[in-house]
Length: 205
Figure (cartoon, rainbow, N blue to C red):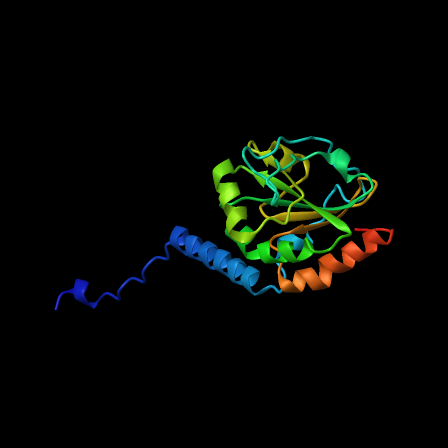
């Protein structure tokens, strides 16, 4: 046996780039798993700088071809209509799966005579938006077409869907990020609608 055969085997060197990459992947997986198990989406707790301020005054044209249940042209998005009303502003798109999930709760809210539900149709095709409402029902009193997404940016939208409550004086009173669920409807939206309808003061954020 030669001397070279009796030398101890050298330990394998650790590949630090591979180890760091693996740790990054594991960390991202952990964050993703944590987001999935939260009772409410973390995004729904993000405060809005617009709370307590006047709603942006940008108007939007109506969605081309969209009509009310009576067959009249659906009005576009006009913030001047907020005056004197409690308005629920919902940012949605027919391509948005969570928008489809929350839609039954918007239909339920449409039964409340104290509020107007106004839609900002975000980066959508008119025919798809019309088909979406024909299939699921139309809870909206007005819908504006935000084809560029610029109005959504002015409203501080993080993603679709998002929902705002606007008071009778045009002040944004509340914001919810993410789809409305049965829990969100009863635990957050209805109490906020009651507060605004009764002239309550918005809690400090």
